[in-house]
Length: 157
Image (cartoon, rainbow, N blue to C red; front, side):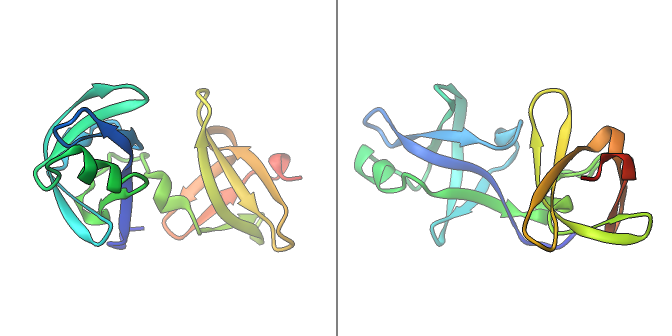
C-alpha cells in the first residue's frame, strides 16, 4: 500500500482575479500542509490558500497573472504518496484500496474500483471480472488487509 505513485490532491478549475490566483477543487482536507505540488509536468510552490467558491483559492509562486492561471485550468495537482501523513491503526487512504483484489470466503469476486463517501461512510465499488460493478459499505462489509479486501458475503450481489 505504500508505493510512491502521485496522489492527486486538487485540480485547478479556473482563475481568480487578475494576479494569478487559481480556484481549486480539493480532494484533501488540509491542502495547506503541502508546499510543493506537481502538475502539467512542472512543480508549483504554494504561497497562500484560503476557502473559496467550490473549494479554495490559492496563489502559487510560479503563476504570475490571470492568463497563466487560465492556461492551467484542468491541471491536476499531486504529491508523491510518501508525502502523505502517516495513518493511525485502522485508518486508510482511499487510493490505497483501489486495485486491491476483493475476496468472499477466499474466492475472488473482483477488484476495488473506487471508494466514495456519500456522507454516511465510505462505500467501496467493486468491479467483477465481467465488468459489472456493485457497492458495499466499507464499515459493515469490508475487512482491509495489506494486500486484499475481504468482503462479507451478505453484501455481494
